[in-house]
Amino acid sequence: MRVIVIGAGIGGLALAQALRSVPLRVLLAHGLDDAIRWGSEYVGHETHPDGTVTATFADGSADHGDLLVGADGATSRVATALAGRPTSSPVGIGGIAGRSPLTPEIRALLPDLLRIGSILAVGPGGTSIFITLQDTVPGPALDPALCVDVPAFPEPPVVYWGVNVALDRLPNARKMGAEAAVRAAGDLLRGWSPVVRKIVSGADPSSVGTFQYHTCDPDAHLTPWPSGTVTALGDAVHAMPPTGGRAAATAIRDADLLATHLADAAKGLTTIPLAVHEYERGPAAYAADAVRVSLKPIVWQRRLANPALGQLVRVATAIASPLTAAFR
View 1: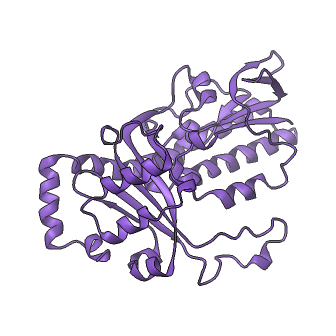
View 2: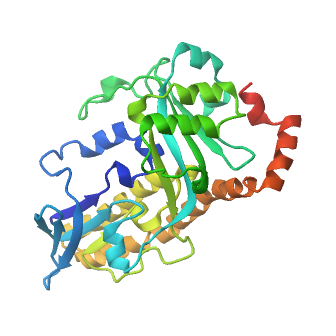
């Protein structure tokens, strides 16, 4: 069985996730060197009478297989071709994300909350920031000696961050360079803790980029096309903002489910179209909930962008706020 998987470039990913996924992508690509073709832009496909599929690319090349899978992100061309329309829409919020070195100075300033988990804080005016640590100084999360099949992929200690805001306050989000993006993030964080501003201003320019959030309708049919030998998974099917921390995990769950059913087809226990049909029934049971969870912070961000509610929150946070206190 030959499966063609159309993936997304960095521009098609939520950058906040892409920044953290280098080891994961190295792991997933292990042993596939001869099977991965970089820089090929999918432009369309044709399904033949025998069920096989030919995918065509912008450079004029083509690839032929038994199954085509679109894993090309929230603006998936494969899913759009299948559904006859985009499968997601912008939520009106975008942002700037990057990573900054976790220096001894920064480590000493960070609150204990960040040593337990990540922080997503939404401030008056509807600006939010996500911060999480990758602190390898205490020791790696996994013993490198256990990395037998795949070599250990060590990374330096860093702080990952993302500043999110309504798109009308972040014009030309896709076009600004890294230095301009860091300056824009600093402007959005005026009035925030000096610690937060220091983290952002110290970003590695090569890691900084901008992005826009997309979402599907969690109450709609997630795979609105007849099952066959072309399908999609991940954000191509159930786009969600990264504010719920579930997008990548849900995509991996899709891949596992699809692979399980395809294994049955490879054994002759079912056909590829029936395996795909069984797979496509699955995401409705778990992905819709993940989308709803991921949209909750977006709802609060929109509410806090309201001037009246924003002023009320300013008063409340001036009196007492765990998140405010955590950064003081």
